Every structure is written in C-alpha cells, then in structure tokens.
Length: 367
Image 1: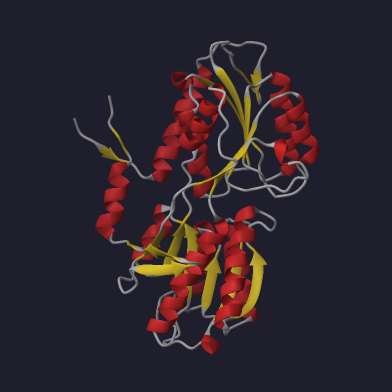
Image 2 (image 1 turned 180 degrees about the horizontal axis):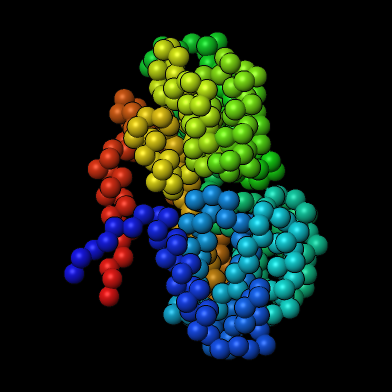
C-alpha cells in the first residue's frame, strides 16, 4: 500500500472535507450549527468552539486539531463557529452555545479585554469555559476554568536571544541594528508577548527599533506594511515578524524593492525573523535563509484541551494555566543553543531532509 505525503495545508483541507462530508450526511433536527442542521446525541459531550478566524496557517492547523479531536468517534458533538476576526461575533457564538446547552465552551479570544459580560453569562449557566491560544483580562478569574497555549513572551525572548548571539558572532554592533517590528493584531496576547520580548531585548542590547506596524497576522497586510516601512526607513536591516504569514509578505516586499532577504547584514541584506513554524512555505524560506530564525508556536491543542475536559468530567480541577512545549528553528548551524531568561534552549537546525521527514510524518494512507 502506497503512502501519500501530505503537509500541514493538505491535512487541514482533508479534515475540513471530512467534516463537511459528515455534516452533509447528517439528518436534520431542531439543533443548528450556523446554517446547517445537526443531530445532537445525549450520549455525546457537547462542546462549543469559538475560533477567532482563519487568518493564518497556524490558525487553520489549530482548527483542524480541534475538529479532529472533538469528533463523534471520540465521544463529542462539536459546534464550531468562525468569528472572522471579530470579538462581537465571538460573544454571539458563546450566547448561542449557552442556548444550545453545551457542556463545555472553548474560546480562542480575539483580544484580551471585553469578556466579562458574556463569560458571566456562561458562568451563570454553569458551563465551564476553556481558553486557548490568546489570554484575556477579566476582573473575576473564575469566569473561565483554564487556559491552554503558548508562552508568547518566552517565544519573543527565544528569538531575540538568537538574534543577540547572531549579531555577536557576525560582529554586528548594536548601533548598526535597525529593526522594523511587524506586529500581529494589536491587543492580541501573541502580539503583546512577542512585542514585549523585542522591546526588552532592544532596550537591554541597545538596538534601534525604528518603526512598528500592525500587520494583523496576515500575509497581505504584512506585505503592505513592510512596503511602507522600507520606503520610509531605508536603514531597516532587520524585520521582526510576529508570525510566518506576515514574514512571507515581508520577504516579498523586500525582494520587490530590489533588496535581498538574508543573513549578510554587513553586505546589505535584510535579516528576517519570525514565529510559528507551521507553514511549509515559511520553513522553506528558512532553509533558503531568506528567513533566519523562527520561534515555534505549536498549534495542535486538541489533545491538551481534551485532557482538561476529561479531568473536569472526572470531577478534578485542571491547572489554571498550561503551556505547550515549543522549540526554535534556524538553518544556520553556527547557533545550536540560545539563552532566554535563566534557561538555555536547543536550536533545531532545519535542513531539507529534516523538513521532508516532518512532512512525511503527516501522512494519510488511502483505503
């Protein structure tokens, strides 16, 4: 039997197709998920998931993980709603989940503030709320049961730790480092943590952050903002992209301007660093050294969230905060370990064979 190698994007597409096929064969009932009717079995644990959107490869992989984990085969009925990047849509989705009488609500919040009222409604309905990815700021911490996600400040510390070592090894003085911070959606936890990591390192090491802009975690906006920044600040020689999709847009903008993304700052190239490590396109640019370093942001939260629900079902209390384990990637073999805070972290040196093996691990064997 021949195995077909499928990357992240193909896996996501396959998961969505399977979900649609299952939904299309389900007989109608009085319960609804968006515009489609679904049957809700009393034997299944009902879970409502308000996903922020589908703005990036990371977000699509995250959605696929939740869909695959909370399937009927695993004992769940999943109500999935895409908020299309709008917090107001998430509030409406949560209220619909409450009306449906779901057992658990999962939320990937748009921003940190503005959740007190709707989460109070979920609490009054005695429905546990599990947050993933981005964090929130509420007056009453009991409005949500637990949070699962990444330590975004640590991600920023890792990438800037790599930058510090790189500049030292290449004898690049602090006064010659001119950084453009291509930020994610302003107010999002990932943006806040990664920006804080850069600002702290810049102040500590004497780097010049010449400009920053909201790239909204998308390739198109990342390209647009980089075009503007390079025009207004021709001295920029480092672009700190707060996710891979924006990095793809930034690399395109650099090349359109007739410059070269790369690791030879002294020779006029522009160093690009990024976050996520999900996009195969971004990882290929890493191998080509058009992106110098990527701080991993692991998207496959499904099993972590399922563990939280299993604990709650057993009458136990999950940890309020659970961080997923993450690494750091580079194709430059001269830096194999970096320091962030009081700890050292290994750097995964990415080669073409390494990337091919990672893609091969995500395989589907046709029946």
